[in-house]
Amino acid sequence: MDIIEIIERIGEGPTAALFGLITGLIFGVAAQRSNFCLRAAAIEFARGKLGGKVAVWFLTFSTALVWVQSAQLLGLFRQADSRMMSVPGSWSGAIIGGLIFGVGMVLSRGCSGRLLVLASTGNLRSVVAGLIFAVTAQMSLKGILAPYRDKLASLWITPDGANVSLLNALHLPDWAGLATGVVFAIAGIYLAKRNEIGVKTWIFASGVGFAVAVGWVLTFSLSQVAFDPVPVNSVTFSGPSANTLMFFLDRNAVLEFDVGLVPGVVIGAFLSSLVAGQFAWQAFDSVPVMRRSMIGAVMMGFGAMLAGGCAIGNGVTGTSVLAGTAWLALFCMWIGAMVTDFLLDQRSLTPAQAC
Image 1 (cartoon, one colour):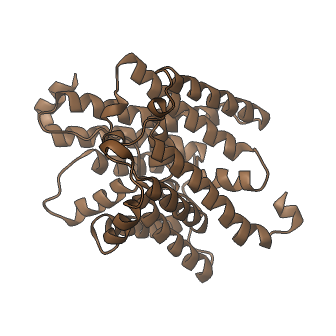
Image 2: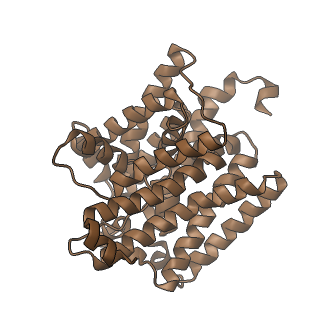
């Protein structure tokens, strides 16, 4: 059955939601089993280690880049048509929002994508933080925080009404994106071998990146045959979290890719944790931990909307299409996370814990 047959049977909106569900299921299973987390990788790196968490991040990052750039070269996807590339980006938003998000994910003990995965495995801390993240993201998109986001984002905008492609900006050939992905993949494989990471973790870490490519290809394919305009999107959790929340609160909301993505991640991570025997109810350890997590969730919600994406939306999905603002936002997220860990957490560690 091809895409046109699916559209004729269920409609364009439900088809987009179905594609989101498929993408989310792959991401949820892979992220839960690999323990993929930008916050964990950034902290490990900040403490002078190139361990398993950094290796998992490199495997995911490189896999997304390789698959997406391969799809581009094969004509299965056009990154110029992606929503991130076809609208103006914000350099100031990437810098300020990325730093704020980096701080927030350390305070919350997980980035937005990781919180959603953990919430699906019985972690009530992540449920609370995730809901706060979604509400704050919606407030930053259309609510009382939107004017502040707009003001900061408008300080420095990309030229010509579109985002900046690193390939074009650096005058590189089309295959350079794939070559960059291969370089990162070699680094990831080296780190994985050095840290004796198991084959299953390799597969699932790469599966997270593969989910990003699946999202891009499916939404692009749908956009080529749909009657109404369809945004070419993939995995991110700032906008989709807000949109999914509003879908269940607004009777006039319509089905779209975002609305299928978030439930898909929840279902995938939940089933994966059950099969692996890793589902367990968990709560906050103390009031200070809860307060810190809630503050971090607010910072992530605002920072993600300001930066144009979260640790997944910018750090894996946006970078896979070589969007300039996404790479800058990712860099700032790493900086924000590492500085926060150094100032708040590393100083409280004993020498043995720091090693």
